[in-house]
Length: 412
Ligand SMILES: Nc1nc2c(c(=O)[nH]1)N[C@H]1C(S)=C(S)[C@@H](COP(=O)(O)OP(=O)(O)OC[C@H]3O[C@@H](n4cnc5c(N)ncnc54)[C@H](O)[C@@H]3O)O[C@H]1N2
Ligand code: MOO
Figure 1: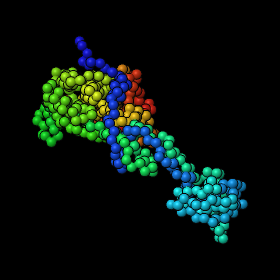
Figure 2: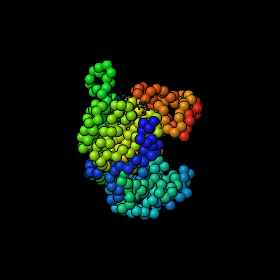
Figure 3: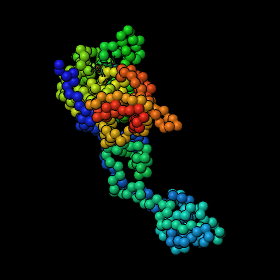
């Protein structure tokens, strides 16, 4: 009997194929819109940040050498002649034996190399300040160029702009930035039994879960959704919908008909598109085995299994990283980015060698530590993901895991 799948790839091989697709072109956007967008060009620092040495405390700027040996019992006495304003670069130099009042964020005058916190001083009047601590040079300072040095690399192309990166852009006044355009992802569901969520299903019909779950996950990953609706199990209708969908999008995700049943036309419909190349049909993961990957011109089509639980897991493992990759994210497939927690498995779980298993687990915080309870159930049901907080990835080389074993679970 011939294989039901063209070729079953390992998950790692499948991932490599996904990485071959190019990121979307770039566009210029306002910095205020840039959260979670991906830089399309390397950025170089246009100025030093901070622009000079700045104080991180309210206190007195001074030369540390003037305080050497000072302490509670034998304070140093310094003369305070200046009061630095937070918004003015000091136009004087400190002389030996002098200090100047400095607020947090104030720029240090020449001649000073440290700041003593006001708590360790006493203003004894007459312009004399008692310092009851010995300071080290550099103490309580943020140094010129410590965040960014003019002309040096700042952020690399492919960086996702999180809040800290946005802070850096704000500090440097980079108000317009070049990012990759959000990938437009067309989504369709196939199946004669699938009806829109607004419809009252007749016996035998099912409301369309996957279009909506997949759309939400595409948006979560930074894509823009182009909904194509539901297409019946008909080769021509499916091929036309795919062709239409690809015209206005960077990628197409569809669910259903990925297996090799009599109604499963997905593979044939894709194969009939001009310029189509089927890259994979079958991946060694459970759930998710009947996943399809094709290339039409430069655009990917990812065919997800119809089962609702399988479609969501394939999206987590392959679909969302693909969308992030198309959005230009240089770390889209980097598994070290997954949020992991260590937990104790509360029952034995079987697993077949040769495929990666994605076991759904519910987490429980107890006095003995975090417990991971496997949520068993069929991948055509919603309940396994509904009742779980995390996934336990069981590698293809592992033949089951024993109760009580510490495992790293992936929070979802
Ligand atoms: N003899 C075999 N049968 C099946 C195998 C197998 O190896 N041998 N694999 C099973 C696995 S695993 C999966 S996963 C499914 C994949 O099926 P398809 O991708 O071809 O999907 P369909 O047959 O179209 O649908 C399966 C199931 O999911 C429901 N579905 C589909 N689309 C939606 C949607 N948008 N919203 C809600 N529910 C949907 C559909 O009604 C079916 O119940 O094949 C197994 N069979
Ligand atoms: O591959 Mo199916 O996706 O195991 O349920």
